[in-house]
Image 1: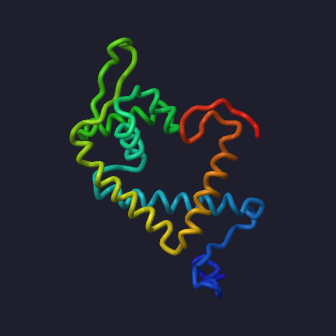
Image 2: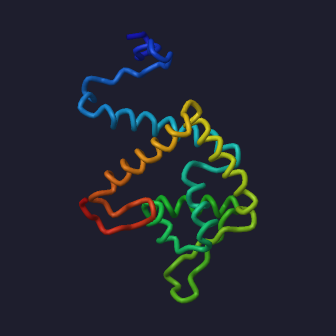
Length: 177
């Protein structure tokens, strides 16, 4: 092992591999997924900073762009968030001028969140950021590997969704396959 904690370049492909602690040996895929998720979020944050957003803010904006004005509670469910986190996200987007909040006309207890004209001007930049992020993630993959990787990630997501009330498209009734 090298001084930096890696096993050094892999002889087969020249890629540095991180040493997996023995205590994580019972979950090497989970350990790898954690490391990949952390790196993915770091890259996303770096790219989103260039358009004035923080990670996850773009996810709320994507839902608003595609679905139009939404109840804030629905955004919580769709994105698998919690109410407090979504409130902070929406407040920051509102301060930046990308969303507007208003009471629902039929139920004043409900807050409706809608995208502003300024947010629509941001959409192209966010899509470009996601394209750059996708390129970083898949730069060394063939088209077949990309398709296989997406299929595997969907399988992992479905496995992790069992027993929870969240699946990518929103709340679901937990079921076992």
